Length: 131
Image (cartoon, rainbow, N blue to C red; front, side):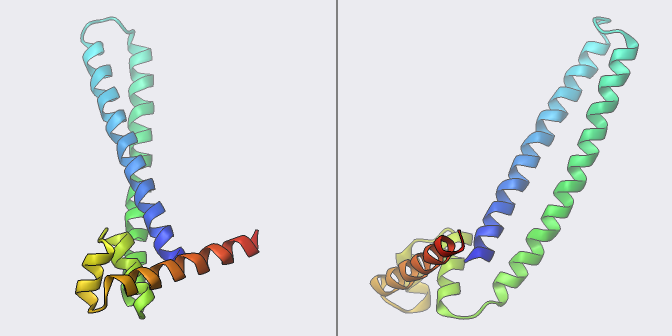
């Protein structure tokens, strides 16, 4: 389950970096528009433009690395065996309900819920012991 939690955290990080990149693109557009109005001197324009472009390049590299990690983690998750991992994958990665999972794997919804809760409780107990 930690692997799946790590995967979900990684997806959130990628989303945050993509949002930051979009913000920088809008900021760069704004700086470009101001340049033509002569409301900013050339030195300040060049400085701000350079900082934005450099940060965008840095964030693109981070996103690329994180997306590569995402693929590697997903490959590892897909190789996991056992009903607990199938349930966790379908629940957390695919976002399916217990009912949908039950239909796919051929068990009752109640049994799927029981296995899922048992795994979550086991993970929670383990985390409390390590604290």
